[in-house]
Image (cartoon, rainbow, N blue to C red; front, top):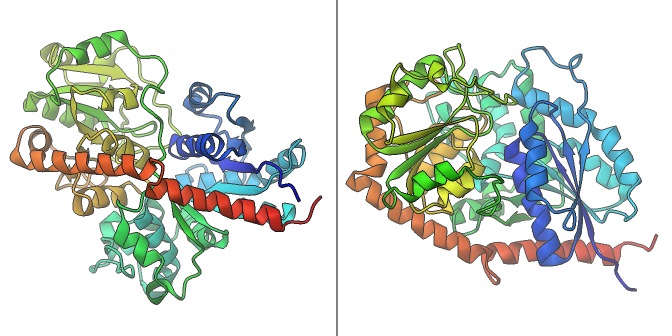
Length: 480
């Protein structure tokens, strides 16, 4: 029997950290494995950057991208509901629209791939009698930690952050109480129960795709596959297919003035500062960061978003539109004193193009996994500044296991990092002997990533195995 072309359905939740890897995964399935791909994107209704990203990064000749309209969840969550609660409820309520949209497609689907917030939609794959997969757009340590959370939920008494001992994950790096993911900070909050449910559902698909590669996390991946370590926890096949990220030159419009300035700077002399598409700092922390950059006397590019009045840092689903007057968020005279030393841009900067520029030698980052991969694959060491979500876990991995980043003594999410510490941290990466060793390590990982993606590499092979399994399931399925 002749087998038709496979047609994968991908479902992405709102947020650039989920959308970008899903779009790029779709591209790979089309260009490398001759799939047809339809990507359903759930709009948050609050971020114009999502639509801009789709338009700038996806050719209609590659994948069909369908934006599902935002759903009204105001009656289902509290007005001050946390990120995970909002996202999971939103993805739960979108299921009828997704089911209807899939049923009207001209080409029947042969596989469903959901991201980590879309696990409740796995049931739709049963209805269409197709295999189902979960794409976790982050690293293996995160999934190892997450699938172990239901066990921690039973044995840990009280709040996780109040524990005195690290959380031991079989065969993996332990997780410190202060580094747990944000939904675990309050066990009485709705988002904790949603996250706990997600952790159980991650393993309910026919496989898990990860945005990492074999050589980056070999010991953690080996532990995940070891029945002696995780034998009591159901684990479908694990497919490390990363790094999956935007290619250089895909960031859309570039400021000629910004890149003309970069072209004039010495090699690896500029530190790039950005907190992602949703990260914000308090007024006080903005001031300390500005002074720290000025004191370091290192060249910089800083993507500045309007500050918050509260003392805590971090946000999500906030576009962060600042006013035209950047100086209102910065110390008096800062822009004048640092003229020529640095460039301040409002809200957004073409990150992948900046990180790939030879003049950039450091990245002060919120440690979103997309940003971390963009830094590593361009050979740029990091200053870890985690704010929310799983970013504290990411920072621990980047600094302590991979050795490609440094971090401040004070967690930015717990207190104000002072200007002197910021100054010293920037110098550690950009000037000190320690920075030379980190730079060598990150460049080594850059080459390993290139090898993993090349034909015959570990991630290329892993994605090929994944697609072969879909083809085999098609051959076994009865003709319609």
